[in-house]
Amino acid sequence: MSTLERIVETTREEVVERREARPLAQLEAALDARPESRPFGEALVRPGISVVAEHKRRSPSAGEIRSDLRLEEVVLAYERGSAAALSILTEGPNFGGSLDDLVTAREITELPVLRKDFIVDPYQVYESAAAGADAILLIVAALHPEDVYELHREARGLDLDVLVEVHDREELEVALDVDADVLGINNRDLSDFSVDLERTYALLADVPAGKTVVSESGLHSREQLEALEQVGVDAVLVGEGLMRARDVEAACRDLTGHAEAL
Image 1: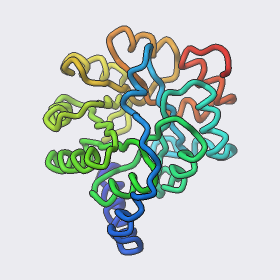
Image 2 (image 1 turned 135 degrees about the vertical axis):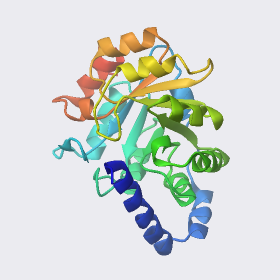
Image 3 (image 1 turned 30 degrees about the vertical axis):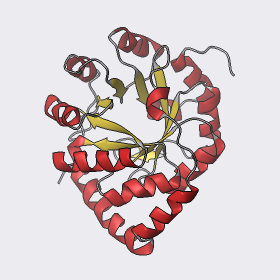
Image 4 (image 1 turned 90 degrees about the horizontal axis):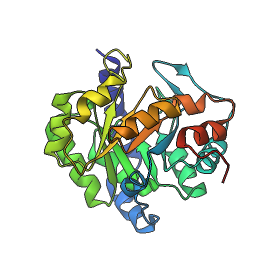
């Protein structure tokens, strides 16, 4: 069993437990108090290449990334560093996150917030909306094509933007078939966790005009971002590189190209 398969299996088990503890009807009722949605997709297509800055405590491939900074410190550093949006990892067993992290982030920033998790069940879509997420991630490699369609439809019906992540041409075809507006090209191979930045360049040629493209994984320098901007990439998602930085705010400013603090 691959790492991805193991995580998906664990996620499905956890969803069953969470649904028993908080039935779907309670989530639907909570939507009445949901904060007004912020346009995640629109934030990625402002002039220049946008940075989606990610809060990420640890990962299966990297182990512990950062334990000396509070989430609040990281989120505000990203905002001051001119990030266009935030990605909050909410998966617990492997990445050390939780939905509480998303709720906290949403309360202290004006930036749109993406729930970064392994979304495999419609319950999680309602869970994300009730927690105040502005967007969710759907990983094509973790889902059957029909599930991608259904989860995408559910999310859009709840006014959630959707970042649909692919890492090969077959997965890209699935994302295009569901008419995803925001496409994430993951430079990391989820079977062995190797990273190849050429993946973005190779798949970009098959992306039709009008789609928002986000390059993910392996990005750590302004030069990389400028090269991606030149070929039409709209945004990048960066987590580990920023989280490991000695000065998170300065590192974010360096990536965004904003030399001065706000």
